[in-house]
Length: 327
Image (cartoon, rainbow, N blue to C red):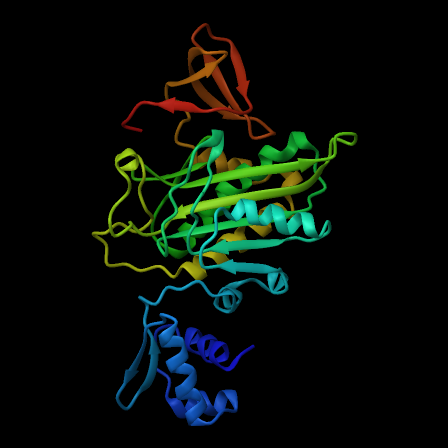
């Protein structure tokens, strides 16, 4: 690890408190000059490091640049060696995850980016991903799962994102089946799961799980077509800050815990509890025909069990559902 990254890691560990230049130098076995040069290099990269008279250096809570080293500070021990790839800008973290996975058939890892120029959602939709306002991350995994079990990973991911948000904030996000996270009636997160399968065995060879989470409102706002739909974890009216590195790490921690025991399906109860469409009247389309139904349960594969207008029960395994506001 370079000198500046060692300094950054120690500043992060202070959790907003000041640390003297001499203490930094002693802890890292550096000269005061090396510490000063490292601080300057970090500031030039965009980190907000304040020099406080008679107290030393302090990493501002407003300093919010993605850092693999900082993320590792908050990862649980079992994930410390998990490969992480970080980019300033990229077309799509899912696309990059697929490329890396194809180069090494046994590889697993996590791709991050400050920005996506061609972020993707389900059903061919785009996901607006401006610079330094969100969390754009994609896991690529080698699960021992059948293709029929792929939806379980999406539902587990939705629960993991909610648990991470709840742990780091006082907010209570909700889930819209199957892959969207909502807060205060607006969508703040989407999940895109893509699989490469072995046709003969029916097993998943590579699974890519993309997460796009709006953390802060863009300075220029959301595009007009998203203005009434999209929201963010932290609104422009709030003074609260949340460190995206810590949020990424917590999502990874929560996801790993659920993923390792995914076949036990213990997370489905948490999913159902947070799924706000339960008991509401919804519509869905099938073969260009629109149907009305009321969701009543989540099945063992993550499917939405609904009761049709004629009283019959059906299970939706994929597709889009609509619900009228207010939720």
